[in-house]
Length: 332
Image (cartoon, rainbow, N blue to C red; front, side, top):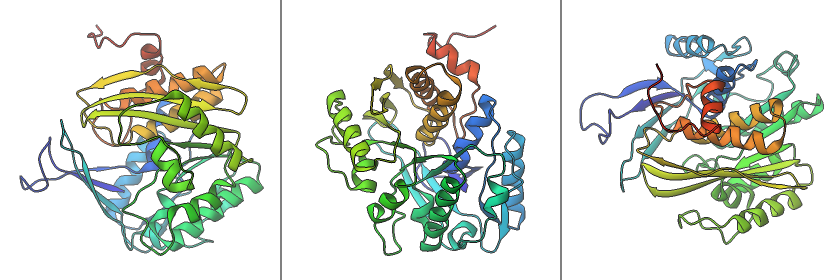
């Protein structure tokens, strides 16, 4: 997507400018993984115009394989961002109708080519929320992945403003999750996307680890195909001060990460995507699942200090924070 953000902490059109960058759930994950040194391919449908050309150049510049991006009819999807600070929350406005991905249909992607040499596929709950045809294409993608023995991870990413085409989130996401191996979510995603009720309150700002274990147990019980459920734990004190941690339930063990107090947040958009990328990388490279969870949480913590959707950090940055070096001292 094209991201258009009000400068600094301005309200929309407080000045006459908007900062133009690119972003989007799966793209953010792809770029984070490429920055960690993983081989990554990004699959989407984009228009055949100069704006999409610039987007593809940026993805390629991070080392992402863009060879399977389809050029089709429609336009580039856009989202507008008004950043929050202190007690003023951030605001997002979507402009995604008639975008190329929203009108793409099953059969638009050659999955034989797209999944050639691929062992892990990641999708978010944002894509099937865009339109009915994008939902059908998303469903096709996870079925094709499973048919080929590819591990599937899904960040549920509930977006209330996008579910407007006649189906509710749980109706779609419960079916899609039946093809998933590893689900990633926060407490609201689980309640709104999977229809699993909980006494965990997203607005409360208070976290009870026991309740999160029970919530993860319920997800794994309802979806026997799942191998793991990861839940991010965000304590929102203000828009620019959050407590940040996560937990992972793999049916046998329950892991809880270190908690970070993130003060003076620069940009929290993409924070969940950076966690997903860190978890995927960690599960594929670290010695155990506790380390994988710590890598994911530290990677996402660092993203909150970087403007834009993309997490522009490498593996060494994450490992330094994991080791306890969070002082922010100048490196000379």
